[in-house]
Image (cartoon, rainbow, N blue to C red; front, top):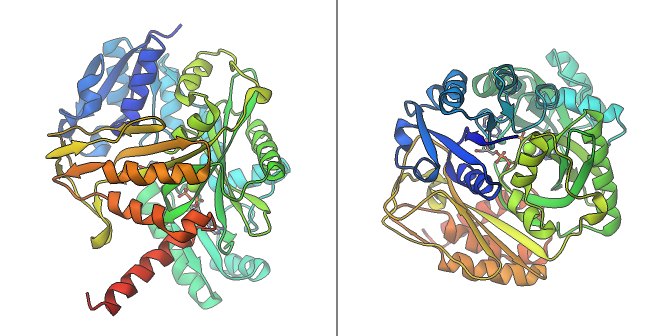
Length: 457
Ligand code: ADP
Ligand code: ADP
Ligand code: MG
């Protein structure tokens, strides 16, 4: 039985996990870098341990410091959150070797699915439709040229170990291939310490639709509907919603079945997300599986009524899922806006600094998962996401209305934020019509820039 959990993360997700532990009657320990002494997750946990200097290499990615923190505080389980070490098979194994329950999937699942090229091969073998491309990693420019000619341009070269939208390059013609492939390899080496890349057909104007699953260690796997994350800037999600505006009962059934098949094909347990691209004819293709809790998990929690972090805690202890597929129904509509400390007018440049005043919206159907408070100084070393605003209403148009005034009520003074930018998106006609795809936001940004030029700005 679990008594004490260490949370190896920071920011709003660490706070989210603290709350889940409290609800489950578990004690929680957090860790912090010297730049995070006054961070909310360090202030409100039952105990908090300093694990190193600001640099993530020396703190939140410092495996030995984290294991020692568990040992020194008597924590027998560790929740990795997202980012940082959440998708490190090596770290999951290190926890297990030290008798610490890793609240996530097995190291084998993490390493298989973290290799995106290999994951696609596994899914293909399991009968899950995948985006056409190379079978596994590509070893030479010649091989890449051959495959690209077969599947047809434009193609993407993608890092096998990629994440966070990094290490993806578009190639429109054969003469660009050599250069773009080498750029992608360099970026992959730099960010992921692994320069392996694979090739994929560029699906034109697709929707990013992902299926949340959760599975216990007995092999019960349940799908919890979808999230549409097509609103992206540089392949990173900005706003998410559930249901997807393009969903039909038939498509959901088919995608959920494929997702469960995908999870079972690799003996997966814990929470996981299978990301698909859906084209205009509603064909769907497996893209990758994320083996962790996701940023946008609250929208699923709201439409299904399932607490995903609580359920993670349950299945990590070897308990069975407390619900079956038949129990799951998608009710109403939820939208999430990521609130970042950044300046949209200046290329989304991060904007750390002191929050002088803060007003957080509230009321029925509004949830704010945040890591900030009035007087808090956002350090410059970490991700710029400071909060998530999630709304729920019976219909999509009601959810949009609610999001509009919730964003308008949200005040963060002292730093720059993307709140007004999110408000512009929410008011956009294509968003309102639900017809946006994953190319929408880049066009929207280009249009605003041109508009400014015309107005002589
Ligand atoms: P989600 O699919 O949950 O929205 P994101 O791609 O936005 O996930 O990533 C969540 C967080 O984890 C972000 O802070 C992102 O920068 C970070 N992240 C994701 N994948 C990686 C990775 N492979 N290496 C480092 N950071 C990552
Ligand atoms: P990451 O691991 O960084 O999340 P993904 O493989 O999930 O990388 O791709 C990130 C985003 O890039 C997707 O959500 C999608 O919008 C876009 N993308 C990826 N692959 C393709 C593709 N083959 N065609 C079109 N868009 C793609
Ligand atoms: Mg992805």
